[in-house]
Length: 137
Ligand SMILES: [Zn+2]
Image 1 (cartoon, rainbow, N blue to C red):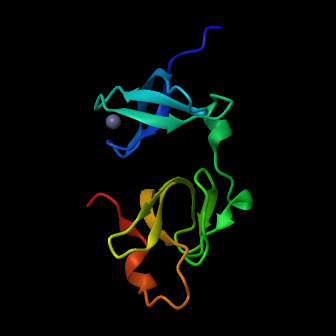
Image 2: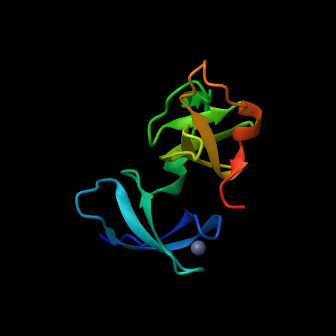
C-alpha cells in the first residue's frame, strides 16, 4: 500500500489547516492517529475516519445535531450552530471554572470554539455571555 503519510489537517496550534505528517497510532485508541504539523512541529492526536480522503470527513449540516445549550453532546458528534451558520465536530468535553459542562467544537469555518452544554434550566447562567467564548485568547 503506497498511501502518503502527509495530509492536510487542522492544527490546533496553528489554528488552520496545515500539512500534517502521520507519525503513528496510539495504542488502544482506535480511529485516532498522531500527526505532526510540518509548520509548527507540534504533534496532535487527531481523529481519522476509515477513509483518509479529507472530503469524506466533510461535515454535513443536514445530519448534524442542532446546537442547544440544554442538550448533552457526545465526542465526535456533528453539531450545527444556527446563529453562526456553521457545522462542527465535538472534540472534547470540559468542565468550566463555574462548574458548567462545556464542549470543545472544531467548526468548519470558525475553527475551535467552546460551547456550554447540558445546562440545567434552573441554573442561572447567562447563556449569551458564555457561548461562543474563544478558546485561545
Ligand atoms: Zn501547526
